[in-house]
Image (cartoon, one colour):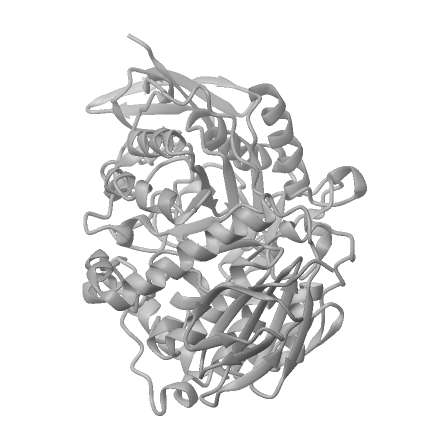
Length: 578
């Protein structure tokens, strides 16, 4: 029978044992590490110097929860069917973010496989999975994971992820996995009991930062880089989305992100399959996507929150909290043409100058943009989506700007049919910690001025309440409703037009914008997106012989190029050749 090798780093321990049932099996020491082998499917704990047994820091499977025994898993046991798959280019791809637990009624990876045909028909290229690393309880967003190598048991465990990736590749879809390397969750985090994984030299919002640059940091760096390789090589995942990399402190000569990038590039060459890394960064610094050879971090792409903020605030009129510097048409124009609104300018929300300018020749596809994602919906006080308050025409207008822009667009589960299902923050911690989480969230939102938006005091949903989770489940039955069906067709048509007009998006990287009283226009290539933002009809002049391609709401076009926009409507036109 094939055995699974277990390796643990514990530099301060003299002995290490595997606890298997009532047996204590010694591990072999070598250079601060200890190794042993067990058959696949064996439950075990690791004991250092005769102490209490703890889960394996590199556990691939935690069927009994984050405090229980680990179970050995052989990733080579899966019979893959994706040998022809060579990956998919991330630049210009259409991404789609899902939370496995709320994406389907069953909340599992196997159930999510059944929805892959819907995503392919929609026009999606890449499915992005919110974090799967094992976390406390059954339900949560996943950003408090503590076993980075394990797949949350409620979602189906590690074998289910392999089945999901295999199926996605059969449908021509790449898979991007959200991973968190800036912190671990507060419950079930036993890493510090094994070695100096964290350091008080760097502080994060979650406590001591990972030890990427101090004494004994090499094994810590290996822990993270090996984790990335684990998903890409052994689970055939195509790319990783790195959470909140601005919270990673590393003063090493080679930043951990640059090292990770170089290692992934080497793996890509070895496998002959396209791999990619996408960073979530709040720094507004294009260095993130520059090659490591040029002093960059080597990420293939990064999230661009400023584009979201500019478009969201323009459509909704929300200008409080971190939207304070957004909302005007000139700010939206700046975001669409120059990516970062804060590109060295003053950030009122942060109280300091922020960001750096994006070079004019830097590929705009290196910036992932969105009108919804788990943060921008779930971190609202009530987890409400724009569709709950905006007229459908403005939702459609935002989709047209997003999907026909030169960026790499991402959708959030259900937005393609205009779902009004909220996505709220939910957890399943033990009662004592759960109370602290709920109180902290209420206190946080009390400072953000949400009562201005909601017209009075806001009763923030209790993350620990199971109903908060249940309210966040997608309602696929909405697709039977005519209004939702109309929005779904709009998204499908936009994505088909994007693919037909721009292909991989390498051409027509830059856009022209214009705006006036109650209207806004974005021109890319020969396509012109014109929208009416108010309840009063507007007339906007386009070049003569411009042809109407798509419209949402009351729109007519005269032969001389006058576009008559009804209230809250949007038109996509093809201009005549220059």
